[in-house]
Length: 249
Image (cartoon, rainbow, N blue to C red):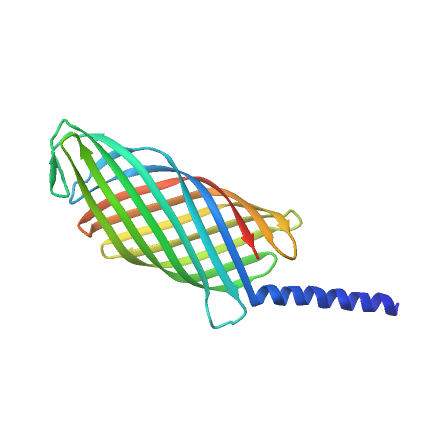
């Protein structure tokens, strides 16, 4: 009986030590492949020009650092790069970046959007059933808008920082290795609005002392609206399914 009690104590201390070591500093890193459907319009003024954008696969990455100190927020950095070409047949004259494109002509467009978020957040709940994070972030938004035809090319660039509200939540389905998750960020300033949200299901593929691994699949949607921000008007939506992997060290 004494041997059994000692074994229980040793096992408990081992589990407690593992939990404490994990909570001192946890590192999360992940990568997603996003099949996005792009739609929308942009220009230097209203009314904007609509384009027929092509669907493309996009890549997203993130890394997060979580620690034990309660009053200091955790840190997450995430990045997504979106590239999508488009085309349009002009019904009216269209002027972009100082260049005029005449009605009846065929034009092409190219949009490259790079978004990097620097997020400070707190874990309000963190247990085997439910986790909930809330925080704020600064989004660095860089974009190149290009319109071209046989006669020439017009290019406008966007470089802005947007304040964002951030949340992330996960609900585990006990004894299955599965969980459902929802995360996103939202910003609404005078000259621009943006939201970026995703939801899906994940499976705990690996659970060891050295590393945990989750496989994720879900749906992601990003909506960007500009109202004379850096001389640009835009109403763009990117949405589609994604799959990814997350590692926890």
